[in-house]
Image (cartoon, rainbow, N blue to C red):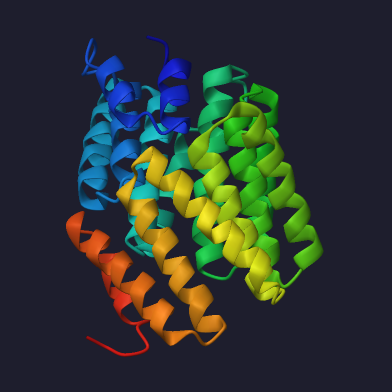
Length: 283
């Protein structure tokens, strides 16, 4: 099983198949990083962080620079999810020690594309929007050189998120739609669901509430088909926020409570508390 095939399983939401495909070589650092990513995508953040730390220690001992960069990215993703931005940035800053400007390999470009993407996400969450766009754009360049379209779509979507946060709604819509087009062509349900969610949030900001509701519901439907409880819960939360926007407190409460139940099921305490604080009537 090649690493690209493992990535394809993950991008389609076939997490069990991805894990099964890696069983033949459980000590391969590339696969260990993928396992961390799967844990993170499914809301098991502390497990993801633990696995990534182990991969990083092992990569440093083997003097494999690309493996070190990949492990740092995986660790930064986990720390980003638990809002430990300072810790994530500290690791990302360490990654520069392992750069090799003479390395033109595909694996090196994949690693740098991923690193710049997570760096952009952390800066975006910290509201450093101009710098986050630079990081997303740099990551996009590497990913376009590699030619794997699913990562390209995530870079485009993240640029749309940054523009949405900046209030540049037309730019945001363009990047969201560019990402969505790729994902529909690839047939990656998690990606398409992510695009629906992004467009729904944009239409909420534009106060096009009927369109927003349609896309929120499409996103939820696809995440249910994938079976990813983390993003099903997030879809419930976004629907709750949507109904808060149109002052439908009863429906807002329902969807936020649905999100709370799922976050509790997967023991995602971070998102549980964020969601609990959104409830119009605290329980």
